[in-house]
Length: 440
Ligand code: PA5
Image (cartoon, rainbow, N blue to C red; front, side, top):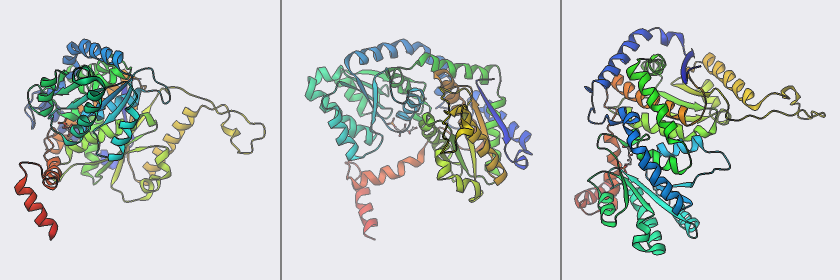
C-alpha cells in the first residue's frame, strides 16, 4: 500500500455529488499556496522546511548529544505551537513503558501552580537541562516556568553552569528570551520569521526535543520531504485532495464539527497538535470547522451514543494504523467462564480493527460520515508523512474557506484582559477599564 491513503467509503454519497467541483477549488488553493499569492504569504517558510532543514540536522544532533551528556531529563518549556509538535511526535514514537532516550518533561503549557510546584520537587535531586521555546520570547506561561527552573539551575550550578544546561529556541533578534539568551550566552536555535508556531514541527522547535527523546529525526524529516515531492513536484495529490475536498464538502453541507479519531492511544497528542493546526488556522471571520479529537474504542463508551444518534452536525476523520506496532493473541481458557473462547487465537489488533470497521459502518448508517486515513505504520518516517500531509491540507482548506490560515488574531483578546487584570506596566488604561466593567 501507499504510505498514506484516504478512503471515502464511509462518506454520505449525497455530499460527494459535488466532489469534482470542490476538487477544482482545492487545485486552485494548491496553486495559490505554491505561487505564494494567497493570504498570509509571508508565513510560508514551513512549505519548504522538510527540504531546507537538512543543513541544520547535524547541529541539532550535536546539541542534543551535549544535552544527553549533561542531563537525564530535558525540560521542554513552551506552549501552543512551541510544544505540541514535539509532544505529538515523542508520544507517537515512545514505547508505552520503557524508553531509551532522555526523559522529556513539558512545562509552560498551562499555569497550574500545583504542576509547577510538584515539578520543582520532582527535579530537585535530578540532572535536568532546559530547552525553552518561544518564538515571540514574551509568552507569559513559558516565561513564568522558565524563570522558575532557570533559577533552580542557577542555584545548583551558578549562572555559568546553568547557561551550559539551557538551550533557547527563539527569534533571531526580538523578544525578552532573545535578550536573556544573548546576555547569558545560551546555546540558541532560531525560529525563522516566516514559520508560525503551529507549522514548526519540522524546525528545531520540534526536532531538538524529539532527538533528545531518542528518536530518528532524519527519518521524520525524510517522511515530510517525500510528501513534499509527492504533492508539490510529482503532483501525486489524489489522497491529499480527497481529504481536503471531502471535509470542505461536509462543512458546506452543515457538518461543522470534525472529530479526529484514533484507535491507538499513542496518537492522542497528534490529535491535540492537529486541533491547534486546524482550529487556529481556520476558525476566523465567524467561519470554520470546529475540531475535536477522540480515542476509540475508549470514547465509544462515552461519546459513541452522541456520534450515533446525537445532533447531525459532526463528521469523523479516522486514522487507521495498518501494520500494528506490536501484537498479542487471546489465550484459550478451558473453563471459558468469561465466554471469550470464540476469540481465542485472534490477535488484539485484529479485534481492534474489527471494532473500527463495525464503528465506521454503524456511524455511516446512522448518518455520521467518516473519512478514513490509512497510515501504513506508526514510525518516524510515517509520522513525518502524516504531519506534513496535515500541514498542507490545513493550508489548502483555509484557502478554500477564504481565510488566512497563517495568522491568529483572535488569541490576543484574552491576553489583553489578563494583562489588564494583572496590572502589567503599559496596560494602565485597560486595567482601569476592565475593573469598571467588572463592577457592573
Ligand atoms: O501557533 C502559534 O503561533 C501559537 O500557538 C504559538 O506557538 C503560541 O502562542 C506560543 O507562542 P510563542 O512561541 O511566541 O511563545
